[in-house]
Image (cartoon, rainbow, N blue to C red; front, side, top):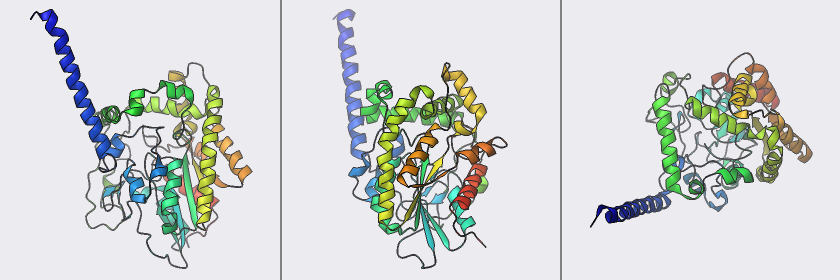
Length: 387
């Protein structure tokens, strides 16, 4: 057989082998998804709904998240409790004199940051011994997830007040995609778990190979659920770079989409999708006898003017931003509906002119940013302060 005739057959054989391996990997990932917690982060794709409403239990809901259902494991500088959350046990009836505050949100509530430096831990300390804060944060989630989580877990928590953190940079867009963005997203990523895993593994490899320092490996040992892991804070490098610089700047530019003047129509569509979910969260919280307060977490580009200008110069091509537009639109909605809220943007913009409030190339608050959030909330919530 000549080389000319063999070449197509070899190419077909290689292609068939590749397709078979791809299908086996795809099938394996679909079979194991939800059963292996570590797969959650590997298969995460922003703006793709996890069909959270299908979950019938908290365990099932968490199993489909990037956190996974991991009771007793070390995560985010703390040992997870028996329900799989980075907080102390809240089972049973709380003390009569105790006011319990539950916190819902994404990585701004759950973060790989020392537990004792997190804003809700600091808020707990500021409010006094008769206040207990239960953190139900789950990374890489969105308002649809917060709603389903409260529906499943709210009665068990028995909270008096629920703080719902809304991260401006992604919570507005995570559960809905504007038509133009949907067209740009690769259909392979939208429908293939194997493609997502390959993409995310590449991102993780780039992150590990370019960041300063290394992640802290630790064992929960005998630490009680919800308690900080031993020596985690003293070993934590707050100056460790997060994303590679190019990835961080591109991500920042993507998150400005809610403030871009050429995307006002899309912002209207996103908010129209989001508002009923927020109203449902408030109603579900009130149905458990608790009060609901939405907390608006500003994105870094809204606070750091130098970062904002640099990404505009690199990606903007003459476009302009109305920095506070998403908060303004949300505040109007809250006020029309009689919903309670705390907007952190102005306090962060003022403080951000004097000091850094975010970790380098990370998008999350540093220690001072967490302190500022706790200070503002302790003042705005008008709850009893520590003696």
